[in-house]
Image (cartoon, rainbow, N blue to C red; front, top):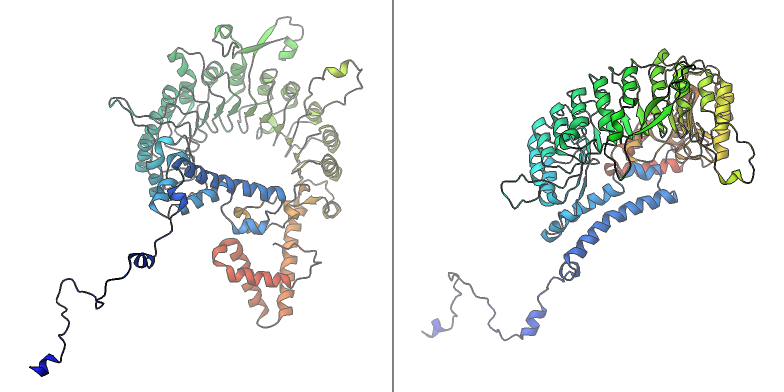
Length: 640
């Protein structure tokens, strides 16, 4: 017994609640609380109201935009920075928002709040997973007003249907169809979208104002009927290159208001590039149903003829009785004489023509047109600023074109490419006459504008009959001329010198002259003469341009005139060869290893800089060390 009592009882481990070996539990409660590390309270999560939190997150995107604009304004945004940052401005702000959603569930709820996603512009993220897009739309759907999904090729039909259902508001009445607040829709490039899914979005979005379905095979004539009957406030429609839409679909859009006791549509922009079956009936429907048009694109419409434009500009008596908009009739007319109409001057009959509000008209590559079409447009489009009628060849002559240009005093851009038969008379019609000194009383009344005074962009490519003297007179008389394309013409070095001199004197930013394939140019002599005032390419600072390796700031300087010719492109190759020569010299000066192997590795490192900067840290450091060995007084093109 005494021997047994000298040993303590062993600890039992079979208890379901094992106790600690410590026996004293008389520790002070304050000391025990002090040993517990409590997480600090976040004032952002606990003190700020939800609306203020959303305002802070919304300001985050705005700060990224303001930062990028500030870099552009100060000139600190370089080619090197642009090549390392794919997303800048608003796109970078959106990426930061998605990163913040990983902090916590409460932050994720804030980031996915619909008040931040009223403008769903995701065209900068073409590889965005559809699941992430649908997750965002499910939460923010009823707030979405603008959707821009250009290039999102992975968007499948089921995703479009779920998108249409998610953006709808909750209806109190179960019998009514849920509708959305969508006003802008851009599905250009979404090739996986089906007709059924597209129609579901249109039916649920009666407030649509701007729709772009360019190149979608899912868009059909039935789509046009749905847009006409559902979206009564539609102002802009782009169905260019839609192979399943023809003239009958556009006719239904223009004629739909008559079924709703209205006289015309609200369309101000209509793009119908490559439309099939275009005829006089459709042009007549557009003339009556879309009098507010400001932008009309009929390029590559093979069925368009001169008589169709005559129908489009003709005046009908019943137009005077149409309803007015804010007290002003949308249909206006002008009274013309037979001479002004291009008829027999001895005719004393007065003719009427409809005056349109068009500012941009594109008739390029409509093969059945001639200069008579321009004659029908004379006096009908006094507000026209952009006129494109390229690709007609010898069918475009001086007669109708000159009569047309004399009635467009505010014209800013003209595209006459391939008009091989036009002469210097066309340029004379665009050359404003110098104003004579006026009396003190007449100074108070400004003179009427002349054609050419506002001209900024002129394309005369392949116009072989124009002379260099007429081009020089036009350059001197047009104070705002910024872009002049003379490739394939008889223009010589004097025209190029005059354009460069006038652009520099007028301090025009981004000026450009294209003189490729001009045999009268002096060649390399002219390039060397103008090298201090010109640049060979229009360089821009962006991640997409990283492989082009523009010279900064030479090729990105907006004050230098862009001079394009056969010899300037050779100069670009020469500068590249000089830079490679400098690299070889730097490698040889460093010594060690095979020269060819070293050069190959260095050029590969350079490519990595512009291919995937995230995986090229070592390549960047090596590239910087090599550039440091080059002479600072080098005249070659060094890409930073």
